[in-house]
Image (cartoon, rainbow, N blue to C red; front, side):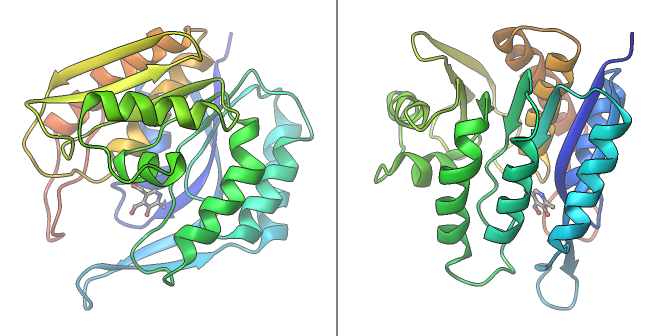
Length: 263
Ligand code: PXL
């Protein structure tokens, strides 16, 4: 049997995040990966490595999704960076055309090179069109703060409260990630299924954010779900896989390190 893991996300030209990371993760975890590109991010080495962001034409996104979903009977998809309300529209419409066993949403709200206000537009459109179709959503601390409407998330209890509030927006499972920014020695994630809270904890690896960690976690959840795991098992395995990818991180000329899968 072939376990298909499909991703709809942006390209990040240095290979540390985005769809490149998603496909590497799928490959390492033994799923057949295929992907649809929504936007192209090229960091600018001559301008503080800021993001240069170019959305793909909505019709070209629709064409890619048509090709992928016509080629195979896909039932598990990860949604990564969408970037604009127009992209969110076309992806949400395409998702609604078939039923999915799992839609894993990494709610990437903004990248640095986008106009101010883009996070707000993206937040509004994601909330209205994609979150209700998601079965699993994986916000980081910033995204959990925005999506929950809380003033701040400073403790594990706050993170649990944010997960509860985001659950009310429609997704079946919320996997909220504390990351390095939530105070404490451990990187804590909380999984809320509408009834039970599962706290996943592992010692922090360094105290700097590593590019692509969030992409890797959501992609690993997607691959494990594609292979038939339950959401709680998928979340546990994904956290382990992401920790290993953070530990094996690579550094180059960028001001941050990037995850390396499967070392
Ligand atoms: O890590 C978030 C992310 C997701 N997708 C793309 C990105 C980034 C961050 O740079 O460029 C395409």
